[in-house]
Length: 373
Ligand code: NAD
Ligand code: AHE
Ligand code: ZN
Ligand code: ZN
Image (cartoon, rainbow, N blue to C red; front, side, top):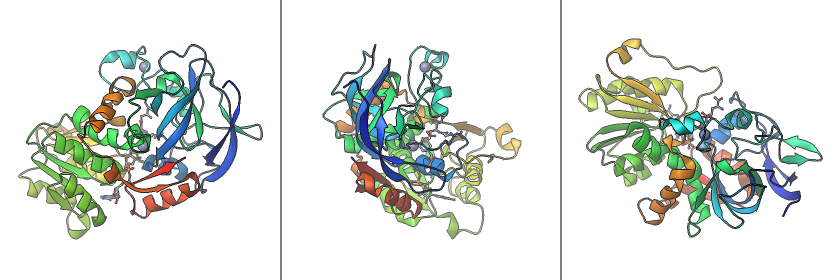
């Protein structure tokens, strides 16, 4: 269908404002682009981060959402890798296969469209969304809080049609990020001791990854103890609330683990916790992986001596996973029963309820809310 269509969408008109459900116009896909019907979208903390105004790349008005699953509705000129009716997961980390990042073999970050993506634009520098003739910006190249959205072809992973999009949408960000951080970025080995800070969708997925890697000890840390039951069910061996101690949590963990953990993961976005996560690592080899996203102007710090004495500080985006070539296999592994996704979906709602999803996240009641279109 090569025409502009109407779509229900949750529009972020400005920082700190609730999303507003609107009927918007969505242009047809241009050359190298694909228009999809979104079936479901998870709500990730990064959506809330950008909506809060803390994201230096936050731009308004925009359609947020980046953890979706959908079906190809139409394709633009020259699109060959997906066809109408294919089931797809949008990728905020595309994979062009041609840029120096893609060819490096060292990273999943792709440079091809990163500049325009960060400005809320399609690669040709324009938007496909509008209301009353005024442009609405894209978000992370995905904008899954709209019934219809347009993405570059390189930003779509084609996945098995038998997988329920209402669940595998979580592989579009949270679950892949947490599992991938453990398996690709840290490469946790059997028997390792691991600390995971923050037990939301990302941290609990890191717990799953650590259990799959057969880590010997998985220490799960959160200030909200209601997260502990699921963490234990997924494989955490110790659950710790830092509020129950009168000394820094890194000291507690170092004492518990005969000198520190082999790997730690910060899954919150709090720069003070990032420091704790580094400093609870074992001298000589402990590695700390930053997953959480911190607001504009915030910086991490530690004594350089922590690094001089062998601790390593790393970060990861989308768990180091290359979306087009590797994500379809995550879907297959889910279908094969290697891990469960329904555990994460504590709430579902229609698009009209999307602001409730943000409230449930902020109050700590949800792991993931999934919007069904
Ligand atoms: P969430 O809100 O669902 O979970 C955060 C958890 O951290 C909650 O359980 C909360 O109780 C806990 N927490 C908050 N402050 C804490 C503290 N001081 N000490 C211990 N626990 C604390 O968030 P999420 O969706 O799981 O996302 C987590 C972070 O990861 C966010 O910063 C998000 O932006 C980021 N993220 C990064 C990537 C990436 O590719 N790097 C991908 C997805 C999400
Ligand atoms: N725009 C922010 C950075 C946000 C950020 O770090 N995003 C992660 C994904 S979070 C998904 O929930 C990411 O992929 N980063 C790599 C990239 O290229 O954006 C800022 O600080 O400017
Ligand atoms: Zn996310
Ligand atoms: Zn590339």
